[in-house]
Length: 310
Image: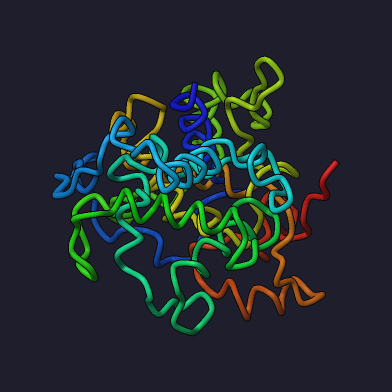
């Protein structure tokens, strides 16, 4: 079931939209065509995290296990800090283990690190707190909270034996070449209907089973907010190409991945928590990139108004 949940969010990324190529800044368009799968080859993984069966049966192991549970069932085990129906594993598949889907082990050893997003050196703790604020549309757990201690313990245990400060193969999401054609809303909608709607629903709002969200919403009030990295078209396209549809990563063409990501991200979602009271000013300060559709007019609507939770 965990794998199903992971796939759902991945499909979420398959939904980026736009009213047409003319609405997309020119630097998203590739200068020349290339084979559909040329830049999306799976990366060889130089590091293998320990299996879950290796979690020690002691007090330290209890913290590792709690961290894993928070990662896979975030709303259940960290309810005070989550504001939507997503789990950490929706963007970091296989409980944060899978190469090419932002694995937890690929991040732990790379912090502290400077991040342009907030213009200072972030600790790993701050990086996790940001995920709660943006991807989970919630609030940051205190650094010494039980939830944060457990998550960091899980990340530490998973990363044992890897070099510090060295970017390993499989870290993050594989980068895609610029698309041959500017990402397009209509084409993306067709990809969504064909490859994403079965899991995420025809309205992109996910699907429930036995009272649990097993395929996450891709937009709307229960999805990630406008501050999350996944709202940027290139990041979403990379995730979709490498991991979606669930269990069939790297079967979509690169163009399909770009179109799906554009379609998904051309829908409203919760407001960026850094919102300054004005969409244009917030875009200028935090979204000044052609990969963000925040503050961009798509199909007659300026995005970034926010979707209130219900």
